Length: 169
Image (tube, rainbow, N blue to C red; front, side):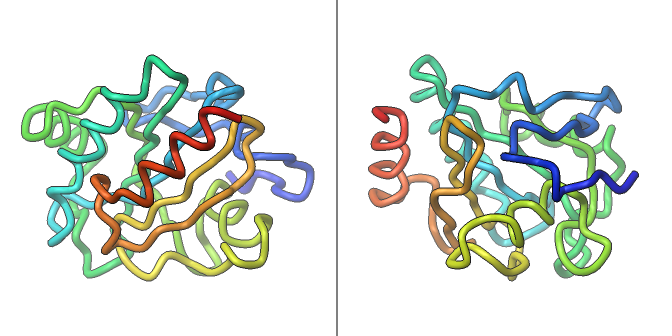
């Protein structure tokens, strides 16, 4: 399971399982701007799914993706199976952006994508997420160019400006 992160040049070099259990190359998003978010279905921030879906709908045609990585790491707020998570996202929030298999996003056993995001990015972006719905903005080359706390709403002017700037580059 442990994927070698040392030989990865960016997020788009990874392969992960989607919420349906299918191996998915993140390389399909190369050349796009992505917002990677660790999500949970029973969190006070869960309503951010709606804002993430709106961002996705607004910017997808311009080359933007939202990539959701469910995790049960914070307050055990994602207890469901991948199948339950998929159903929850699609039924309650009508999400159409990619949702991946539930995995660990913090600590020694974190999934390789989160090891890359939190240790192989610029020093200012290092460190495990402190809670659910931490957002990492990824440029077209797969590099982290922004990190936003759980408190940063998907409707945030700053986040929107950063997405627009990255899309224009």
